[in-house]
Length: 462
Ligand code: NDP
Image (cartoon, protein in one colour):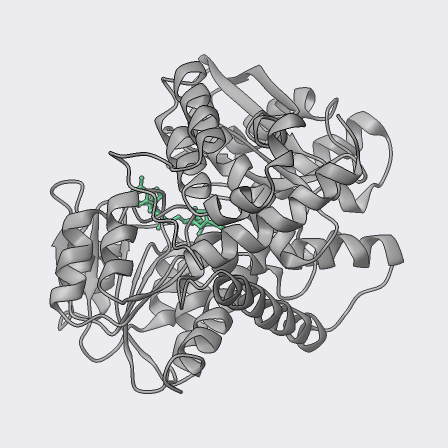
């Protein structure tokens, strides 16, 4: 079997892939995150494209990299002090090949078209891996919910939904949360949707509160799912387990908190967590109840951890390399944001003896960092597969809404676990089929791409 090794400088051996990448780079030349996400996928599917020369005639790749629809809209709202402020809202409806568009909403000042498109593009592949009938989308706004009053958050969400409601529906497009959008924001968005549409359409949003249609275990799902994937990956690589391993987790949000909880349940010791300002190191193991109080209840800063645990240490972030990756760990879980783990950080982790990386956030490792980790035989659980537990459980929430029936926490968690096992096996099998060893980054892309390509061929030129 020929090994196709894509090198950024040399480019592809396959001319069709090179043509499509060049077109994206030319057309979307200001969208660096989007180009990065496309290049990452294309760089791993060369053996599949070689096997299917017929894809070029039907422009399969060109169709896969062009969103079905991209909506950009104005979101005005009034602040508590009476000032009107205008933000930009987005919804990228990237692909409905295998189900209604599905993907979260992000409220963060860094949101722009490139970030929305990269997230929506990756979501298509992630959703395909879940084995559930969900297409790919993403949305959000450059609005920053930090330090806003509840009233301001509510008015912003109502304004955002006043436009978004035209484009979504439980069989059309189903948003959920992401950075800056949690249960509170989903509640306000759902309330406004219901008010405008005059209908209780439970499945139009996921991540809802339990009192009006949410699913048990949705909050925990992405973090738990990441650890289930990690458990499988370690098991298949030298029968290792999480027990006794030292773990560092970036972020202190929804994904990070529940990854920390599940890792500790499996006997691992989580010694560090972070937020955008810096990280805390607690050599005795992070006190997660304290993190939940600071982050979930008070919406505070992670540095406040030291007030209750003065024996812990705080390292402020000084540049693009987060200090958390300087801390020695067996397993590192980037669970904050894109490109947060750089080549420098990857080198530091390898130097300190890391054995596995689990991507809880979307595209948290830069391309150079991923290449370096794989070249040094570090196990990498890629985001599209490893953090798919959240969207999979969102799909389970949609099913419960349709059935008008609720599953118990244990039932949802069991389904989540078996979905993560299946996702791991798909990545493993695809990597093995193409002689790629334990390169699950390539395995995930190939498994998802193969499924999507079949669906695209079957549906004709659309
Ligand atoms: P939250 O808003 O709950 O938490 C985000 C965390 O990341 C916070 O600790 C935040 O710190 C930190 N963070 C955000 N932006 C930056 C930045 N630019 N630099 C450094 N740190 C940053 O978000 P989630 O936990 O929901 O999402 C985290 C990641 O996981 C995202 O990449 C998201 O796309 C991905 N994901 C989430 C899923 C979900 O179900 N929630 C599902 C699949 C993927 P601070 O408070 O200081 O901003």
